[in-house]
Amino acid sequence: MTWLPANPEAVFTYGAPQLKFGPGSADEVGHDLRVLGATRVLVVTDPGVLATGWPDRVAEGIRAAGLEAVVHDSAHVEPTDASLVAALDRARADGPFDGFVAVGGGSAIDTAKAVDLLLTDGGELMEYVNVPVGAGRAPGGPLAPLVAVPTTTGTGAESTTICVLDVLSLKVKTGISHARLRPALAVVDPRLTATQPPGVTASAGMDILYHALESWTARPYTSFERKQPGERVPYCGSNPISDLWSERAMALLAKAFRTAVRIGSDESARGDMALAATFAGLGFGNAGVHLPHAIAYPVAGRVRDFHPEGYPSDEPMVPHGMAVALTAPEAFRWTFEADPDRYLAAARLLEPGQPGQGPRWSGEPRDVLPGVLVDLMRDIGMPNGLAAVGYDEGDVHDLVEGALKQQRLLATSPRAVGADDLAGIVTRSLQLWE
Image (cartoon, rainbow, N blue to C red; front, side, top):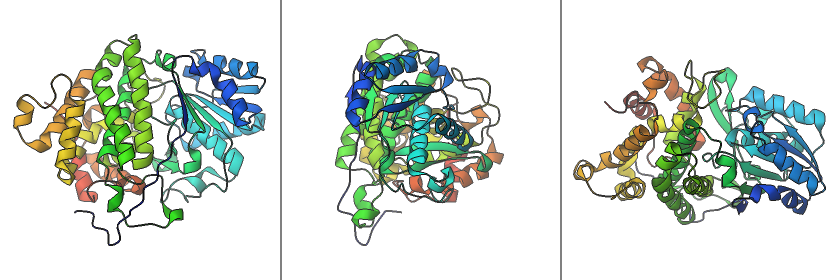
């Protein structure tokens, strides 16, 4: 189905945080917070990142600038509704705070977003969670300033308006989405990513890739019905500004991704991955993501007994970037007809060496991009489809039902998608290569 609105949208919106990038930028956070008007700051991190020493170093810099700083290792890897409430309770006990800093991956940044939201605006967590899982309440006013200092190259959470969480009782991953959740400042210091294990670099890098590729292929903003100014949402569809960020992110990934996984000490590759993550966040944080992310939420939320390399081993999990990657080749094969030229252009951007050449390009055009994606998965050690992380044909129905709850993401799909379409994508993704 082609999107044919009766009254096409003619306006797109674009938002981004202030950005500071480069080695040494994390040592300047105290100065930045003082400029933002903060006096008493909560630094949110997780136990693993805390052990690297970076959160305490950032806190010392904040104190050296004349501000108070309290460090909480309250973030849970892949946040849940329970972990966010626990982090909120701990922050409330040590508050009040008029500024927040997140030092960590997307889990720490999303935890800080939720704590800031609930301490500043009040209410209960599920009031803010996206419809239909929650009530979709919007913040009533501006939040306290949040400075995001990422330590992983993947989520782009430092640039976005999204807080992602698992709702444990429903076994589904969902989110909170509002422009006021976007950090006031993103501080991207590539030095902080040097401690990423290869498995984390691979999974987080897959999140960069699909932020960029889904943003690049999202339905155009002109394919939506025209909205009144107060009705426009952060995910507005692909647009000329987001396209520039997404295109550049893909080019950087083609150059650096495999090297960053294989040689973690390569400073050039680490720097390119950090820049790619930021660029992709600046793209998808406005255009949106679609099918691979929508299916990834139940894939991560319903995991039974998979323990990925490089992550905490005390509980099963499918890391977010990995969950997105597992159905992406088949999702992009299915959506190819929406814009064949754009899909082939993406394949050229992502293919290393001599893009656009070789046997792959003489076959079916719809198979080109999936082939590029599968080759990358194999090179960096991603599992071979959903079966490799514990799913089988008996799980297809539940995974589809979970994906159908992600209406905010499905609305950005380049093709209108139903339950049968999703079931086909999931089934074909059980095994991706022989």
